[in-house]
Image (cartoon, rainbow, N blue to C red; front, side):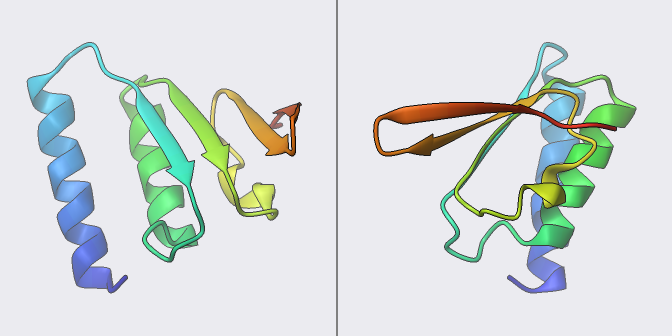
Length: 88
C-alpha cells in the first residue's frame, strides 16, 4: 500500500487506542500486500509505546519484521504449529 494509506491506517489505530483503553493488536498477515514491513513496524512501535499487547500470525516467512513485538509468533505448517519467541 502507499505511504498515504499507511498513514490512514495509523491514524485509525491511534484513534482506536484513544477510544478503547483495553486494547490489543492482532496482526494476521496473509502476505497480500496490505501489511507492509513499514506498516507492521509502525504498528508494533505504537503498540509498545502505549503498552498494548501485540499478537502476530504471519504468513510471511521473514519473521524478523515482527522483531520487537512483545509477544510470541505462531506459525502453522500443515497441521503443526510452531511457537517462536522474538528477542527484543
